[in-house]
Image 1 (spheres, rainbow, N blue to C red):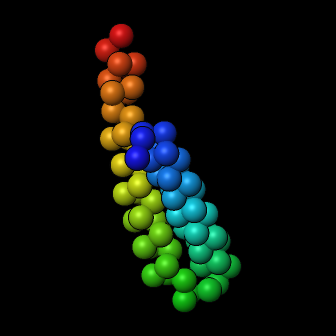
Image 2 (image 1 turned 180 degrees about the horizontal axis):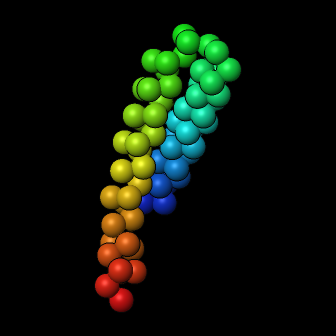
Image 3 (image 1 turned 120 degrees about the horizontal axis):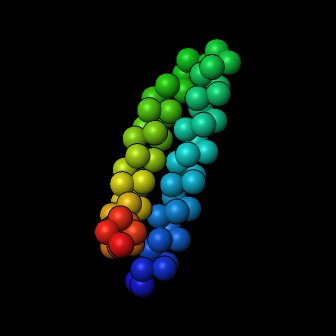
Length: 67
């Protein structure tokens, strides 16, 4: 799998996890207490995917910092 396809999968996965986390957060804010576990797990998955995203862009980040 080339890097572009991998980044597409990572980005789409992060977006889906973010949407789930946001939706369940809004539902909890409106009073639904049953979504707490889904919200926590979606948020943790989102953070993990963002870390993977940053690692995949590490060389670009390093090049921009040390120009």
